[in-house]
Length: 398
Image (cartoon, rainbow, N blue to C red; front, side, top):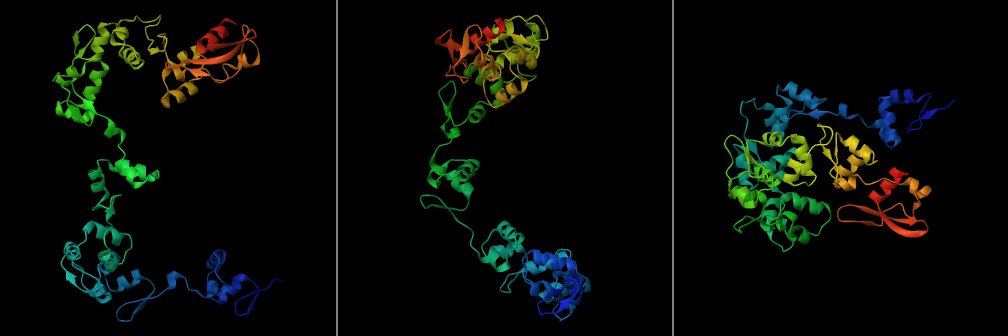
């Protein structure tokens, strides 16, 4: 039969019997041994719950809660007083007050408020509170100098915000560049995209941002964007005052309407179709005057100008899965790039010849500025370059 032996050589029939002999819970013993404690420490170290705390009169208590209950003082007030540098006797014996704001530093100096204490030690109250809340000692919280921010030229600043303001960059830009591992000089001196952008109004005056230009002309940035989408000139956008009842909308002929819906109804199209056409790069005239397709509810337009009742129908026409289309479109690709063929669609060309055409490479060898892809093919024994539209037409006619 296995025998359990403690650090003194005493033998026990079981581990539980040994723990009972040393007055230690068997679960605590097992946990300590798994953490790598020595046998003597695992058996003889008393649990923290059994550690005794003593008041200023020498009375022993199992916990701080028990001691505070004996002295009839809440635990949070006791801890707050100790954090403010009070002696144990004063923290326990002083009566509770409605506004107990007096504080003492580590040298015994007394102050009426924490603000007075911080002013004496020349430290910001919020910094002091943050340090105490993080577990700093009273002495360290009061005497540790505040970290000074220094740039690459050795100039000192009170905070990162002031340094960023001095170098003309935003705090978010500073944080992002620092996390990317940029040298401090590059972080502070390289102009950001926002800093590079210069916006000019119709008079030639320059602004650091579009928002600043809009503020100067007393219009909102959203109104500026709306008017820009309608094809207005910069001068007209900035100088036309906002309508009290709502912004007027003007078509390509100069006719004014109370809103976009009214204009679309006048031209016999839906507002959603108009927005879809504008986002596809159509001009205002084309978007308003191009007649609807066979179905009056069509409102999705592909790069060729064909209209569909839904994105699903458009993707089916282009032989692209809806998931692949959305994934590409949401990643920032253009509509034509999002409708580009997948490897599965061009698979027939890589296996066998389709109308005498066979792909030599499944990846496009060239992509034009408008997003059209071109593929290297074997056209009846001769190398040829065909566009994706030509390949698709061959598939449909096969």
